[in-house]
Every structure is written in C-alpha cells, then in structure tokens.
Image (cartoon, rainbow, N blue to C red; front, side, top):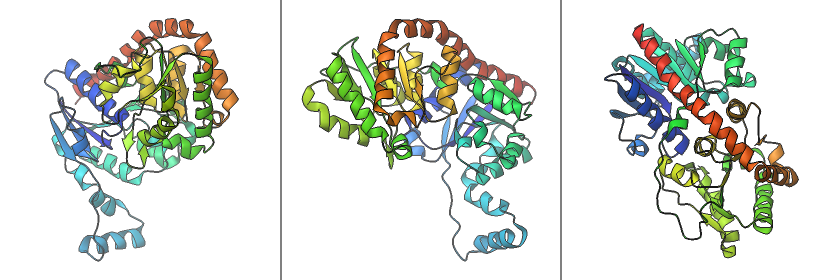
Length: 388
C-alpha cells in the first residue's frame, strides 16, 4: 500500500509531528510493505522523521498577476463562479503527488474546525477523480464547525476516522455513514528520555504549557495562568517546568513561556524546557512529571498516555471529547471563557491535587483501551485498502 499524507503544516508544531510519527509507525507495523509519503507545507521541518519514505514540498503556489493562469482563473471565477482552476494551480504541489498513492490521508486532525476550506475541497475532488481512496485521519469536528458545503465535502471520503466520540456522534447525526471511531495516533507515540535539567524534582514537578493561540482568544487568560503559578509556588513545594509544544513563528509557545520564566526564575522552582526538542523528547519530559497543565492538545495527550494527571486549558471539541473518552466525563477541561478566571483555574488545580491518585488509577484503566483504539484506525485503513 502506498499512503500519501497531506494537509500537514510542518513539524514545528510538535503535535503535528506526533501525528505523522505515530501514524507512520502504526501503518508500517500493521500493513505489509506499506510506503508512507508526506506532503508538507514546510518539508525541511519534517526531516527529523526518519520513518517516512519521502517528504514532498506541499506549500501553496502563487499565480502571477496578469499571467495566462491569472487571466484564465479570473474569467472562470468572475463569469462562472468557478474556483477550481485557480485552486488547482495554488495547490498543485499537493495535487501532482496524488497519482502515486493508493490511499490519501488528510491528517490535519482539527483542520475542519476553522471555517470553509475551498482549496481542500478541490484537492479532495481531485483525489476521487483519480480513483484513489480518501481518508480523513483522526479528526475532531464540532457541530458549530459544519456547513452544507463542508458536509458535501465530507461525503466524498471513503472513510472518516473520528478520534473521539463527540465528533463521531455529531457526524453521524448529520447522516454521514462513512464514520468510524478511533483514538488519536499520538497516544502511541514513543518517548525519549533526555537528562533532567538542574532543579527538576523527580516525582514532584508540574508541567505548564500555554499558547499564544489561547491568549489571543482570551486576553485575560495569561494573567490567570500567572495567578496559578503564584498559587503553586505559595502553597506547594512543586517545581514548575514550563513546556513549549508549538514553536511556529507567530504562534510560538516558547516566547510566552519565556516571559513567565523571566518573571519567576529567581524562585529557583520554575524551569523552562528548550524550544528545539522533538515530540518524543518533549514526551520524555512530560512522562516524568507528577502533574501536567496544558493548552496544546498533543502535549496533554503526551501526559495522558504517560498516566500523568492532567488539567486541560481546552478550547475545542477535541479536548472535551478526548477527556470524555478517557474519564467518562469532561474531567478537568476548562473552556476558553473559564481560563480567564483565576479562582476557577486555581480551584481546578486544587482538585487535580486532591484527586491525584483517583485520576491516575483511571488513566491506568483507560489508556490501554485508548491505545487499542489508536491501533483500530490502521485496521480500518487496511480493510479499506483490501477493497481497492
């Protein structure tokens, strides 16, 4: 089987890296002689993933003003409201690789949560026009994200793999019959344990991950997180490890966490993990924490899968759905509006401490089953390929 992964923005987002790494390993483990190719918006960032058979540049192409393609696309759009030619030119770096694949995996787990995506719809049409199997791999989609146009696109997929039951139920309620339940492949991600930094307390360190994305959506959230840091320093003897997980320009966890570190490093109890680690190395640190508090979904997945009691600064259906599948409830997941309230944040953290053992026991029960669901995704993929 030749598998082409697309709609990947690059591995500066360690969650995206985690999906590619773990998915590639699962596919090659369960599908005999599988080849996995990645089309990436920033292919240089993905060279750290050695398991891939090839990495291609999938960045957008521009249409030069007053060129033949520009004139033709303008006519088609203005006279016929037809974007297909223009979109085909913009996304030709992806489209030109479709023919080498048996199965095309759209791997952006929450890509469909961000409005209309006509370029993606066009690519999906072209996958099907070439007779290839089309799979939406490990997705999360809320009811508020769906539109008639998006639903029509989702009907094109031969298989939609929802990574939690909230998405599964939403999509099935809309009449989609091509949806199966799995779990995020990153639950199976391996870890690499680097030496612990000076000041780390083994068995008594709490990780904190915070993101510019959450801060932009709720400007008061940064002050609330600082209140939580103050509370931890004043009422516990925990060491705090500030943990970046996305290091994209303009969306860089490290920058905002560095500002926290500058303010609190004098305490000797606040550490800042470096910004150059890969996903397995970050998981290696997260796995040795006593607690974890995170805004990035895949940082929290690294914690959950390592049986670390976790509080989620969630902002979408994926955070809620993943927690619900693990605990049977949306346990210790704070919505975007809640995380600006210092009292709420501190109260949830206190609950995390009080229920530490109970939470860890539940993780010990649930995570093996979640891992099985991650593997189930490849079983569904293999069955689909058997029909090719």
